[in-house]
Length: 170
Image 1: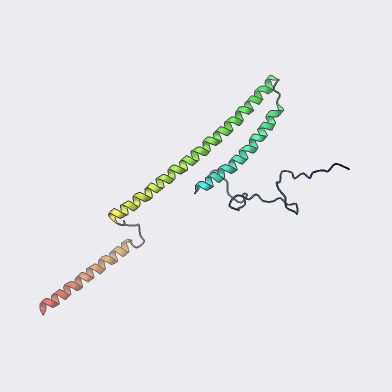
Image 2: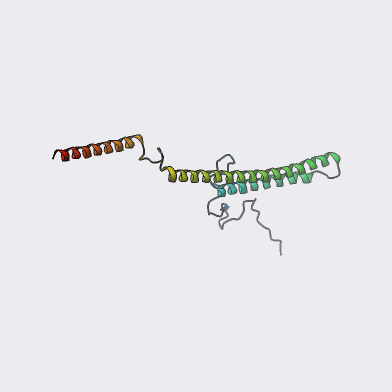
């Protein structure tokens, strides 16, 4: 009997019965390719930040794997190649450390910003409880609606005064 050969997939991942590459799907059931992973974009939730970190970590692993392959080509014995090998090793370590520090910093900044926004919300609600609603908080409290209220109360006072004058005449 002959040797059986495996079919290579060229790194495309699992295939369907028709041979097409399946799209990567994350936990939420969304396509990973369709999500925006720009580090410059503003994240609105902790989940989005963590998701972006996972994607960045995946890219970091790929670059580190490439650097390790390059490092393996250098000889341990020859002095010139040994130095290049050490430089690559140091580069890999610094890349990993910088990534970890960046992730921790971003999560810490997100947590502090969330605490500040919660503090602002509680301060605003406490101020409303003490002082009542302030101008501009409601759409109803515009200058025009305040003027209408004043006109109504003034007309009500005039009517009340007119009724008192009529009662005095009687």
